[in-house]
Length: 423
Ligand code: BJ8
Image (tube, rainbow, N blue to C red; front, side, top):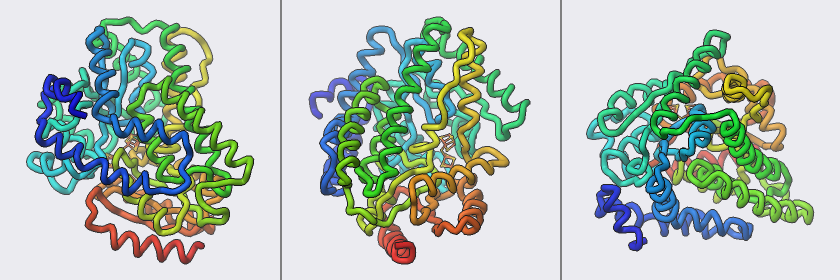
């Protein structure tokens, strides 16, 4: 990684602190990922991406900028990546998934805030994430209170733009969101200096939809018993979805799926047939937050699906192109996005239906509701989800956690007990 030292210095990273972060990753990755048995060959590409997570991909982004391109940092699947790509930009996810950067955030923000937000904000404050430093514009949204109030402070540290995401899904909310797409289009054009034409937008929609279809293919293969891939590996791929070049990622996921299809045909899986199948539902798990999957799969579960934005919520629907004018295309993008059922909306009964349908489709023996600490939308919504699961006869437990390792023993005990009951 020292070959990237100059690049990191040029980006203004705190090299000493950044070294501490990078030095810790290989041992964790070995313990969580490389120690798994029977992994598909196709995971080699994704191992490589992780090994280069602050190296090669960042270098690609720097080269893109050197050629006049722009980089947009995002935190939510509602931010329309299609517009960024259509203007020749690149979008990268900035959600934080480690407690490494949280102490820096807690010097500024209240401690009783979701770790996803604190981790991201801490990366910016401590200058230990090259993706923040390479971004020309950071795009936030008004989803939960934690995020929208943090953006007010974040704007003091980086160029910041906030999209107003409505909290309901009525006609006036859809109008507001469509208006926000137009406003964002203007902003993207201003930052990149490139006009978004309908031809370019159709190409961008196709790129994003193709990537979504590839990941959906992977998820569909997980419906088999035995599952051809571990939940841990699938989670990693869903996390890399937010960083990698979209076209390359799509190709690599299809290559992996070809291999997994062979496994399914032969009745081979990463675990033995009949392993206890679990659906995880709840808050996103940004890289490298692998705690729940690691504990659950080491305790004897096969995690077969994630109802999460690092999971099925990112896969929601295809963009139905009904006309080729810019107005038609923006309308199509907003219609697809409004099918994403995030707990920041009210009412949000469609998400409850999604969870029950997914549990059936993926033949889950039980559901683990996973909520990051201090996430009010998902935490409160978990009450209704639990009742609905009970009514549908699907066993579930609710787990609240953060990025620390302090509760690992306690979680393991609870998950083992749950698996024993449902297994
Ligand atoms: S569409 S899930 S990506 S908002 S976990 S920061 S909600 S306190 S991430 Fe999300 Fe968009 Fe919704 Fe998806 Fe707040 Fe909760 Fe933290 Fe969260």
